[in-house]
Image 1 (cartoon, rainbow, N blue to C red):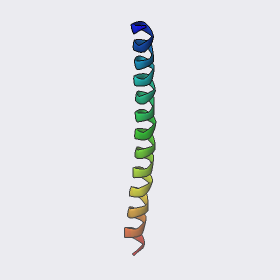
Image 2 (cartoon, one colour):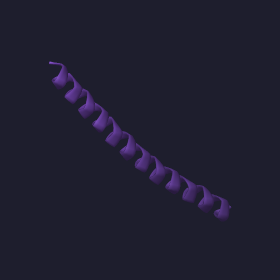
Image 3 (spheres, rainbow, N blue to C red):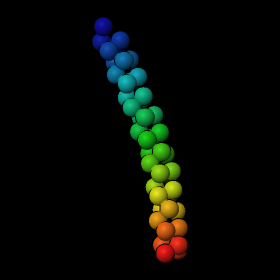
Image 4 (cartoon, helix red, strand yellow):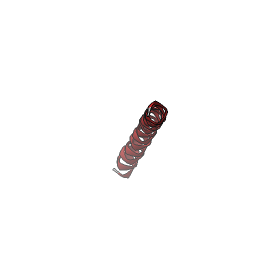
Amino acid sequence: MEITTWFIDSYVIFYIGIIIVIVGIIGMIIQGKFKKVIEFIIEYF
């Protein structure tokens, strides 16, 4: 019984890690685009 709960816990931790990485990549992309938009607005005005 303990082995199965440990297996589930490690599985959950693994998936949380993947989610954090995906969110981080999306955040970097959004920040990069946001920075470009701000630079474009500053240059435009």
